[in-house]
Figure 1 (cartoon, rainbow, N blue to C red):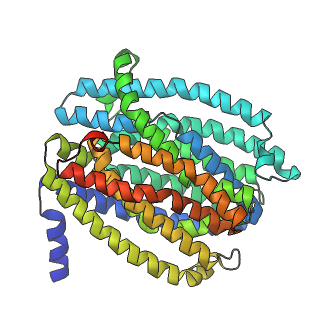
Figure 2: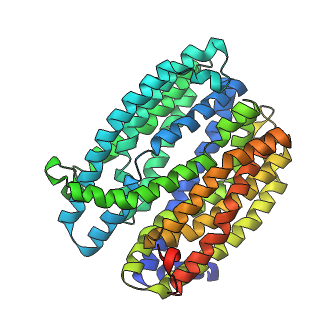
Figure 3: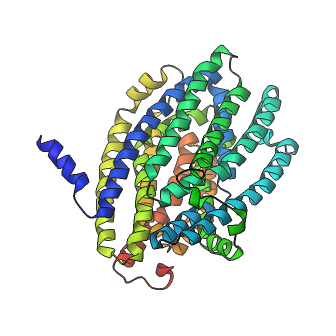
Length: 453
């Protein structure tokens, strides 16, 4: 009973913002946990269905398309901040203008980008660049076209999730993400009874599932609960786009830098090591990134909370919040160590004989993830205050050195998959140092010059 009472006290005591944040985090952790279980289920199912090479192609293709998903010039994240500020002020008219402007700007942009990418897909010999065998090239190109179209839909439709984030209803996003994964799992279980090892059908099932769910969610909520925020052409404003774009551009450049650092690993492994190395890295990352999901949850919940606290000058709440997150980070480092030590047993139970993941790959990935969560922990405050210019410069510098460092570790030191991951580690070091310094200055109200931008 004592444990139960302490648990209740933790979630029911504190100011309204803290209670709301803790309840949302708890709900999200539970839903996210179910999603992680599904992710672990469909990884070996996918590997078994496609085989190592085709699964490596599939993972590499998704990494390429992830770039496409993030080319919104940061408007989605700008919408989260601006919409959240408008709602906090009770200005619904302002809020709907931001929603309408964001949706129509992204809609116009994505139409052009989709057409451009489809042309490149059918004209460039990109399959040669990632070592696709001749007998699979036609199937991979067709799959590329389907994924581009499906992710184009998702690109715009998923912005309803930014509304949920701004309204501090993160659990909604996780529920619909869980529903998406569950739908895909059902399709994976059915596919072997239709056709064996079809890369095209497998990739199409994933792309369409992840596009249709957010589209359906947006149509439902904008016609029900959030009808007053429903995008309308008459509310589109050029000056609101400038506002979204000004803040969004910094977020966009940070996102592109993050993509270069985190999402190029599969492509680099396929190009400079082997396609067989891609599933090795992906398995280690999926296993060891479990605790990183907690920081994604904290970031998405505490970001809008920090927007509100900073706007009201409640620095003590912000200091208390970041101290709590640091304690969580230290616990996850200890967890990462244990996970690495038992990883051979986990891989054997999880993947059976389908894939072997070397211990050194797990160690390198664990270090990379711990450094990433350290940086993300301080980004919670920086994103909430909007003071992200220095962060942007640091991420761009990290992106600049990431690929050359990875190639150096592979080509010169012959470290294989580990070398690619060490390139990520090396690029994160400047951010590891700069981020906590800036946050401490902001919370101490001593931020000046570049530290205050």
